Length: 172
Image (cartoon, rainbow, N blue to C red; front, side, top):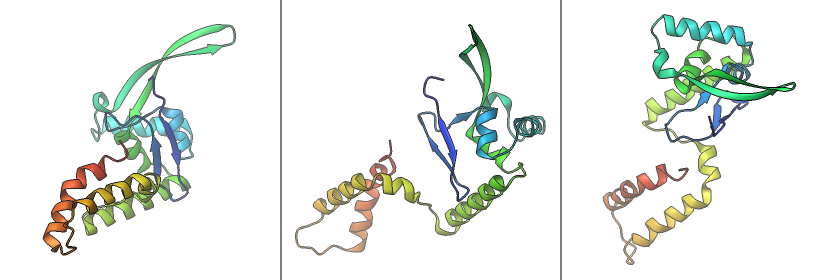
């Protein structure tokens, strides 16, 4: 894995991720997942085994073996380490019994509820990080409005719809 994904846990319970999202997933090894949910690796390993055995998730789609090279004393050792994708990390988060996993479940439930009720969700921290680009996009939309200043709601919605792809890909 050339681009090491950085995974950390927010105080709210949200899993905040940074990394390469080209494949629309992230990968974490047992240590990463144990760190996220503040629990031991053996428990994470048991949950992953159970998730695969029950058929909840398939091993082929959620597990990748990635060769890593590390120094151990005087020697260089090459090992294959299993990495698990976001689907597996989320499934584990619903099984782990720890304070942080509980915060994660509360955050996930609140986020899912908001998405279902409102029909969308907004990642405020991402918008804040990209605020200047968001404002730039807004100014571009304003520039397309008629100079007369009279615009009907349908026209505004049509403009927003046209720029929706731009707003979604701002982080990209």
